Length: 502
Image (cartoon, rainbow, N blue to C red; front, side, top):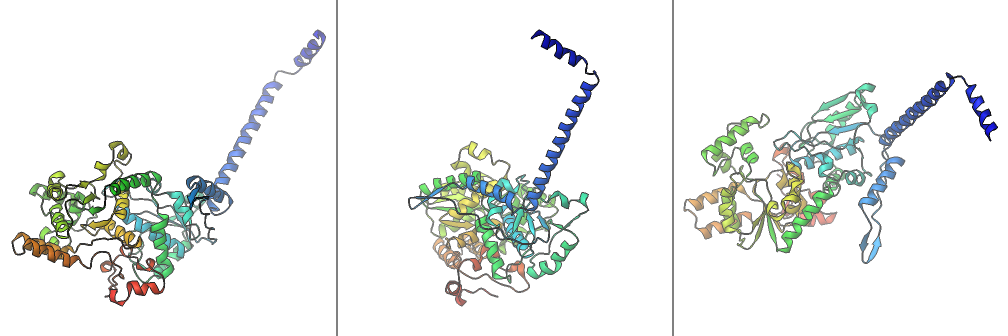
């Protein structure tokens, strides 16, 4: 054993000292090169998966995610697997469409539905929409913070290809430029086909930097109108944390009996924007005016509040809402959920409404502070909770016809024409003034209010069409009548007697 050891030692001693470091250097060099090759392959694989979204890699990922997010469920006592993904639509994409939505949650929601529809008939690949972070609410939420992004992509895969980002190969570094532009408002499919599609010949990526009301209410092919509904009522699903907390709110309310969702739009931003100061102190009116001047995109500056109110263009005050609810026959025992942000003037302005209806609640009073903590400073996520409760309520009453009021109205029509009281503010403020000055007794006032609202309860009707005046038409998302019935049933439901064509 000793002789053998010595012989080994002798052979090692004969290796030149300079050879050993060179050998280690070679090994190190080979390892570095191998790592570079592996990382390059990985990057290429990710790029290919983005480009081939509907093919093997993304398909496998989608199925894995879908199965984990949609576990087995029981139907009629039998455990069943979740419904399979629809086959992806196979088409040659003409380019990538990026969109930046502007406005509040429901304005952006409608815009997303429109942009999916535009991408579909232009054969584009849609990039997951970007949400507004610069509006009055300054909400930093991204799409995936509010909506279930994987459900959104998967549930529309048979209609349009949706990706999370534009592939790097279409960047400026590779010779491509992104064209930024707002499409023309209230445009139909002919505009997009003739004016927008040719732009993709030069620019493979277009960025629509404004998306509000960029698709017409009427005159679109039936399949496009139905796609708008499919996106709105099926694909745009809130994230699990919003859905779970929204369902908890609804359950708490339902356990205590029927409830009214009152969208009391007497909030600082709406009052400043509309110039409505009825019931405000002089100091509050000045504060609202300063805010209006502070936002350059709020075009109207000098506004006469009482003129705006007489035209029915102001949200009802809490005091006015209290009288209207009583005139409509709601009693003190009814639950009223305030679907709104902070009421301007706080509890002082809610005093009369609360005196008439003691069972007034808000999400802040129904949920523990820590449950809402995750949504603080995220107004769109808070609005999503109010949206869910409003859709589920026994009766929905908006005091102003803004975007939330319109989108909730349409959702409730789609859900079986749930009772929605659409206040005729122009007529109602006239009646309120007559009651206040003694011209109408309470009974006369109540009768007049009920007659005014008799045919404004969200009944089936066709949208009002005003040729060449799209801003004055009924809004598609408030009454998507093409999606509410099929075939001959439409004429029964929305027949000539219910037509509102102008």
